[in-house]
Length: 174
Image (cartoon, rainbow, N blue to C red; front, side, top):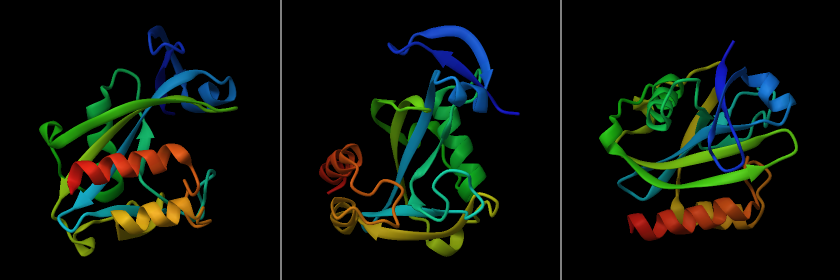
């Protein structure tokens, strides 16, 4: 079981730990991380979610995950990168971009967004096969275009938040 800390809508700790699925079922505010991995060619790493995943199976997504109870956001980002991609990175190498809140029906989250720059080639990653099936790099300009076009293969296609995020990252990396 994975336990997460619960927060109020103002991102203040409630001093409550809850099992992740229970938190989602009850619509509790919690923290997640989102890491945009970018290589030297201004390409963003996308990971294809396993078809066995409960949410968004088979969709291309960014590295993301829950912040576990007692964990910092940067610790969670590093843990997710290591677990999902076997990517070695240090806290100092994560560039904080922003936080955003999403008040969804079953997922009330406060996401901490980071940029991670890398020179890793696709063949250097080792994916966690129960969570992912494939990886690819997509140039930031193409990613913006296919997100705008609401590409159904993307976990975030047509999402205005992601469009704004990718534009911000484009301005940051180019």
